[in-house]
Image 1 (cartoon, one colour):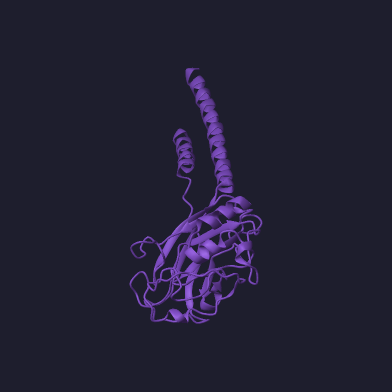
Image 2 (cartoon, rainbow, N blue to C red; image 1 turned 90 degrees about the vertical axis):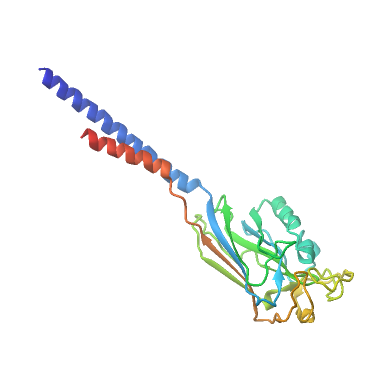
Length: 280
C-alpha cells in the first residue's frame, strides 16, 4: 500500500515537473523571439582612407540610418538650404549637421573618428582604417544610410550621398539587406560653393595659411584639388598624389555585427531540460 502511494506521489511530482518545465521552456523561447524582434540591430561600419601615403586626408565621418527623408545636399542648390553642410564642408564639423538631423527626427546618427590620426585631430590619414559598431534602434523605419565628410586640405570640398534613398540598409520588415559597400572616388567630391578655392586662402589642414574668402555659388562637382599638389599639410606631409576623377579616395563597408547569444535564457532552458531528465 505504502509503495503504491509513493509511486502515485512520484508520478504526480513528475507530471507537475514536466508541466513546469514545458512552461519554462515555452516562456523562455517566446522571450527569445520577442527579444530578437524588438532589439536594436548592431552594424559594423568600416571606413578606409584609400589614398596613397602622399595623398589626401578626410575629416571624421558623419553617418546616419534614417527613414529616407533626410537630404544632406542636392547639386545645383546652395549649401544654405542644407543646415550643417557649410560647417562640415569648410571646417569638418559634424555637430551642426547632427543637430539638424536630430531636429528632423529621421533616425539615428553618429560621427566616426580616427584616433590614430596625426596628433591634434582624429582625421583619417591616408591608409587608415577604422571599424565602428553602429546601433540602429528600429530597422523597420531607419532603413537608409547616409554619410558626409570634408576632404582636406581644401576650402570647402566634401563627399556625401546626394540621394537619401541611394543606400538601403534594411527592407520593410527590418531585415538587413547588406553587406553594403560604398566607394568614393575623386569624381564624387563636391564643392560646397561657400568658400573660394584658393591654396593660399585659408584652406583647412593646409600649411599655406592665408585668409579665406566667402562665395555664394551652388553645390557642384569639384573642379579638382590639383592646385594643392606640392604643398604641405598640417600633418607635415607633402601632397604628391593627384585626386583624379577615377582615383579611389575612401571606402565605406557596412555589415551586420555578429549578435551576442542570449546566454541567460538559454541557460534556463538547459537547466530545465537537465532537471527533467534526472527526474525521469
